[in-house]
Image (cartoon, rainbow, N blue to C red; front, side, top):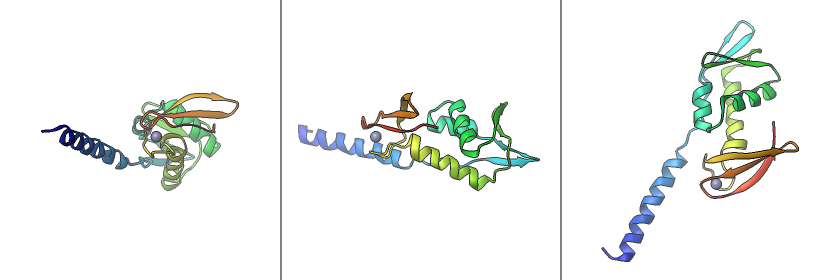
Length: 135
Ligand SMILES: [Zn+2]
């Protein structure tokens, strides 16, 4: 195999890798309403998928829904009635703003810091760096 062929092969492997990333799916809320509360059962799955702390997701949802939240075992308890579709929408919005890189659209970002109400997001895939309004 010559050098050109090696390059082609490497390129093919890289494009296959990035294709896998495009298949990234934003998790849906797995939740149920119990009395005046909503139990989000898959907060761990959401946090793992976002590569953020559960506390970060909880903080965002607390702010978005304007209701207190607390952890109960592996579930997030929201002190308000929120339909599953509405909760999924909030989570989708979270991923679109805070997780998925606005340059390369991969979910490989991390928060580098928060200053004066703005979060600095850095993408580990493409190196993009930008700020978004904090929550
Ligand atoms: Zn990126």
